[in-house]
Length: 261
Image (cartoon, rainbow, N blue to C red; front, side, top):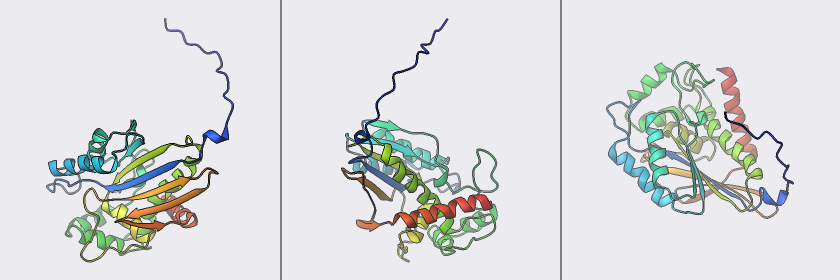
């Protein structure tokens, strides 16, 4: 018969100097790799799409002194993308937990796990009838308005990404001082393009209508020796400062949208 030691563990003395100082968290938000276009909704990655994320890991996850967590949505192509990157990463600690709902673009009515509807089936069918790129531009053109009662506006969708960033901006205070952590978040072009436009103010150009497969932007959160936070975003080689109040306001839009649904 198994026996367990239920004796109380000695409490460790809390040392604030061991938490939250000189920490770096790099949140990497990436679009999934190239998908099989035979099924635009459920498509798995092509071989090229899998290779894109192997190359992604070799380029962006090549530091063996960093920890790595990989999140995706509950869609096959984002899971595949994340696992390909995870397999090639040389990070000293690698974790792939459950899907991150805020990264998803849910379809139809919410059925379980308190998931939130983000796009209705009729609106999705309309987007699927458009060429790739045009459908993304059509969606983000709604800005603060909902395409229909069941579909999130681009600002509400962008708020899901903002909520994740706000959460990590708080978590960094309890992370081990001196640690360097990468968090790869694999999502969809609608979600990521909405954040770029609505929060960072980056307008997609006619020549580039959506994020390319395996393209990404980074949100980098640093603390100094006193624990002070600095938060920046890097996209296409340019650095953008994101005011915390702006992030909080978008995160609140996301939470309000969930309540409305």
